[in-house]
Length: 454
Ligand SMILES: *Cc1c(COP(=O)(O)O)cnc(C)c1O
Image 1 (tube, protein in one colour):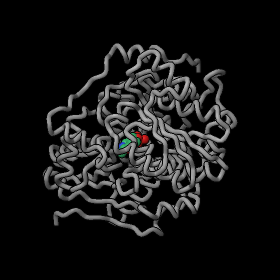
Image 2: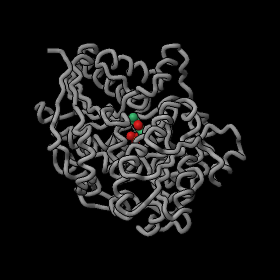
Image 3: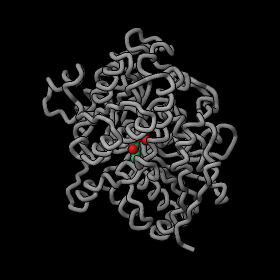
Image 4: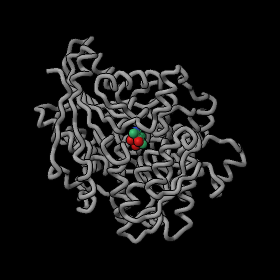
């Protein structure tokens, strides 16, 4: 039997609670600091940006957080997402390894992002918020929040990194279809955008800049809050629905992973699939090898510094301790727009420090090559970001073959690439290059890290 096997659960199996890894970590991550006083922030400091319910989740140490029933109702449209055993890929690779992938591309926006977008829109609506601003790279997050905003009747304004705005017009059209407004960043709508444009009129933008623009508008308007699609604790917690479902689906298959692979931009889909397994390990369960895969052109976990830094380029956000390339770092314009962030989720960084996970980087051409091999075996065309996870999983499967070991590999196929076909066209035309960042630019961005005496 070499065909793909699908493990499906009915909607009664959608988890009733998100999992919060804070409860199981041997030590807590370093505190979030106020950018002015450099003292730990309290819930009130964050109140201009987020509804209190989300702030309390951000600092919660409860192991389980109830998923509100209206959110579970919406999840039913596409959850539980399928888990597949990639038998045809295994055969193509002639590997003794078993490869499973959780497919998050079945959501309306085509990625894992609606898992948190729907939750965040729900809590904002509940708090009486009318408008939400946000940033987006490739447009996956912007379109997910636009979808959630449409369901809850919220006005959504999205600052989209300019290079992606130009590369991916269909993601912008999708946001507009859901009723959101999409603006190329840096823009003239904010002080932080204007300051960047004054330095460089053709600036390609970065997630750090787009975050500054969105935060600035939320901080200066009472009826407006801000939403972030990754990095923050509550976002990672919302994504754990992915790993929790995977545990149950693998049990149906009579299996458990030895190796878990995910791609990391800000760390949310990776944490979503991995944290429930890491938590089980920390509570005495089986040890898992967990690998975060990032692009060589934006390598926060493998080349960044573990230090306090701003989440944005305009220095409006609190300081968080994370692996960072420096908040002014602008990565080259490679196609995996969702992986172009200068920092990493503090919880993922902390797990790397604790030795609970490993990190590895790949160039974009080898990732596209892996994605094409995957599509030809399994039929699903991965998003350019997801190709990093595919490449990581394939390399582990090949290692199993070389070492003659049969291991169970699980990876997160976090989104489909249907809006990214221009990137595939470029790949087939031989137009993709493995762009590297300038070492001098990285050194300069790291030299600009804020000084914090712990
Ligand atoms: C946004 C996005 C990413 C990167 O964000 P994480 O928080 O690291 O998951 C990766 N893949 C896809 C498909 C995305 O939309």
